[in-house]
Length: 146
Image 1: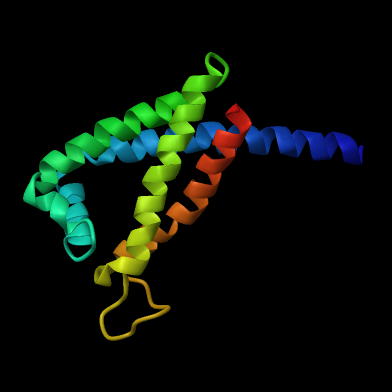
Image 2 (image 1 turned 120 degrees about the vertical axis):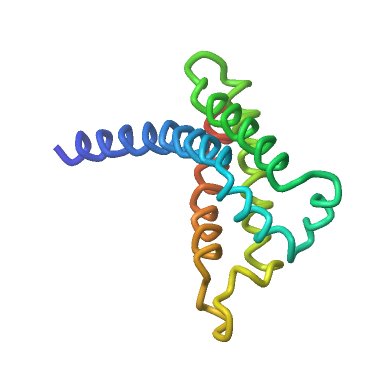
C-alpha cells in the first residue's frame, strides 16, 4: 500500500510539475499583453542592470516580445509526449528566463520595501520570489526531457 501511494503521489507530482509549469508560463504570457504588466516590467527593470533594454524597446513592445516567448516556452514544455527535444529546449529557455528574473531580486532596488530593506519584499519582490520555484521546475523539465 505504501508503494502504491508513493508511486501515485510521484506520478501526480511529476504531471503537475510539468503541465502546471507550462500552464503557469502560458498564463503569465497572456497577462503580459496588459498595459499594467508593461508598467510593472518597466518599474522592475528600469532600476537594474537590464535598464539598457529600455533604450531600444518601449515597455509595451518588450512585454509583447516576452508574452509571445512565454506562450511558446509553455507550449514547448508541454510537448514532451510528442517531442522530447522541443520540451528540452522549452525547459532550457524557461530556466534562463527565470534566472534573469531571479537575478533582479538582487540587483533592483524596487524589490525591497522602502525603508525596511531585507527581508521585507515589496509586491514586485514577492512576485519575483516565486521564480525560484519556477526555475526549479524548469530545471527539472530539462533533466526529465534529456
